[in-house]
Length: 112
Length: 114
View 1 (cartoon, each protein chain N blue to C red):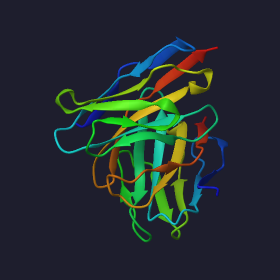
View 2 (view 1 turned 90 degrees about the horizontal axis):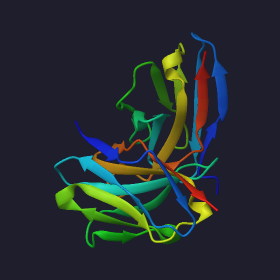
View 3 (view 1 turned 60 degrees about the vertical axis):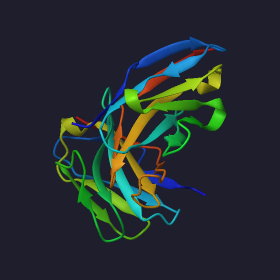
View 4 (view 1 turned 90 degrees about the vertical axis):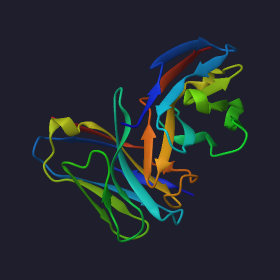
């Protein structure tokens, strides 16, 4: 079955630390990849997306993600996190039609 | 620009009660979705509406019904609520179902069934 796996359910970092959140998917066909973020009390919003081309994509607020096809991975990175990055992060994979599969989410807490 | 608006934000139901979750979008999107979010399971698609006048089952449709009232509105109904339906429900919309279209989400409805 198609699935999206996010390796860490909870991450705690201090401000200025580097962040990498893992995401792996199981689907052999063409995929379109997303990271969404949900800040406390707010709705999910798009952080970045990959459809084709350069596998390193840049999103809002200094986030970037790298698509590694051979590893079925789409990890999210940020060189230096801020307290305002405290949120829940969801990796999502669109496999076709109206089917988007979401990972379980990673809760990030950044200590000031 | 409100985007996607869901009501209510919180609801407590007794087992067997019914209720309807309302969702409206003002972005002239063709496609709308209902998801539920449970701890450790991410978002799972309940129903979707590819365009006005159509609805289709998603991954977890049992116990739910939907209505695409018009292009703007897509409601989710629980006819006889069960404790297993305790969850956070999200409505979303997108321009259409193409892979490269972003989904826009509402703020969610936290439903507890006791």
